[in-house]
Image (cartoon, rainbow, N blue to C red; front, side, top):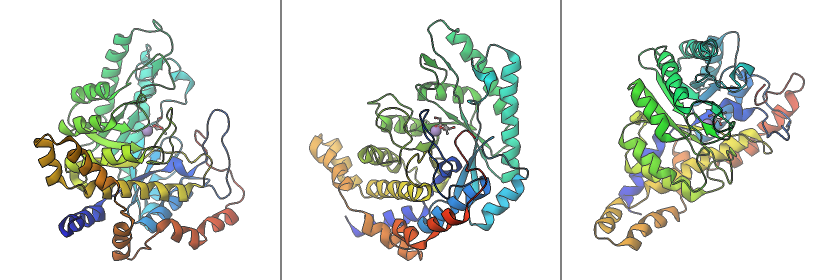
Length: 390
Ligand code: LRH
Ligand code: MN
């Protein structure tokens, strides 16, 4: 690792930011059980306090994305001010089209105009929240789909979707973005209406420049080469955001990098290769996870560290050697350029970065020593713990 590469890596890592999901600080689980844990946040204000702890110890998590209606409050200006007092800001606003009986057969794709209008109006509410909090990203995951072949006309649903998305897009102020998230299955099991990156991209291209694709790392068929999709979306300038997590089987929403750290590295390698790590690259690096059994704040700290480590390794790829090997057809040397970087222990480099900004070299251990986890377990008694879906 040359000194120059090291210096450039430190400079890039110093600018990296990772956005945290408010819902990671509430209880979550599966259809079998949602577990409670001591000290879990009971409202959006406490969720933001927890997110601010992650930023306090890592220094790279200055934004919190909200989910509507899970994070509804009477005064979003007050919530944004609360965040600012804690040194963080409100990031993307997530709409929710997956918890209303009216949406059983679809929301923006529903055969009935009444239902589509209701789903569009929900996004007008989300845009109002964006105006009140200073958020510029409207994140729309479309949960719509069908369970049986023939249940509905696949093409007619796409046409209705395109029209509904046009109306949502028209709600945006200049400077705002629509982030359109795809998912290949669940909650429907025959056809999702935005099942893959191609379908999301087609709709984004039809909408306009303010529409970009969200790539959730848990939303692909097993064996999908996700970094190829990253490369292609960057190539056409339509990668708007990541929802980082990891999975073994389905949309498991586990800690990013925990299941397949080499995949996360390969993804960040495409980001670095395209110079898309820059804060002004237009790519919002977000986490979308649930800590079903592990403590939430330490889980988010571990997740942020995993993204930082994968990023640092990608920044240490000797790109001159890589390019030379690729162009000379030296297969193993080219692959080796990546695996050498991936095998590099970047923790000393990240420790140096943190200490250079007055942070503890090991945020995870520093948080454990802070006693904050015990304090919230002691203090947060009574009330109802926030929970996925509640
Ligand atoms: C859907 C999803 C989406 C969010 C939800 C919390 O699976 O990835 O990004 O709305 O999780
Ligand atoms: Mn997601």
